[in-house]
Image (tube, rainbow, N blue to C red; front, side, top):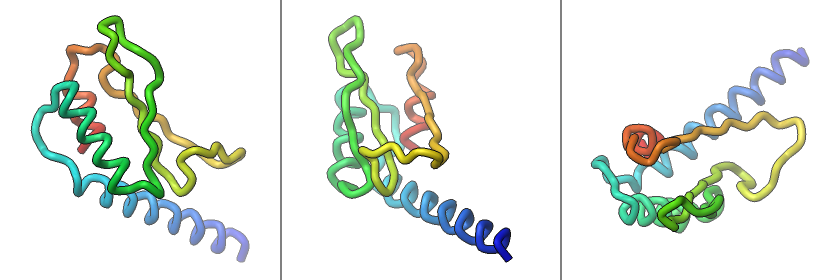
Length: 105
């Protein structure tokens, strides 16, 4: 009985995560984004999904540009101990645009 309950809660969390991603993706332009367009797209996601999305700068690039980070979740500003988290990284190298586009889509 306990295992069935655990599976149900897990499946509900997966479903909720998929719904959150679908809500966020509806605001994205499916084309390549330069730095300014990427920043605008991420700000739009944050503004349109203020309860589940939070954007912040992790630092500056060698060109002085902000290195944007976006967290998504029920409580995007709070780390919940013992709750699994996933980290996706795109644009590890600035000239590799496919990584960031994949994360937006």
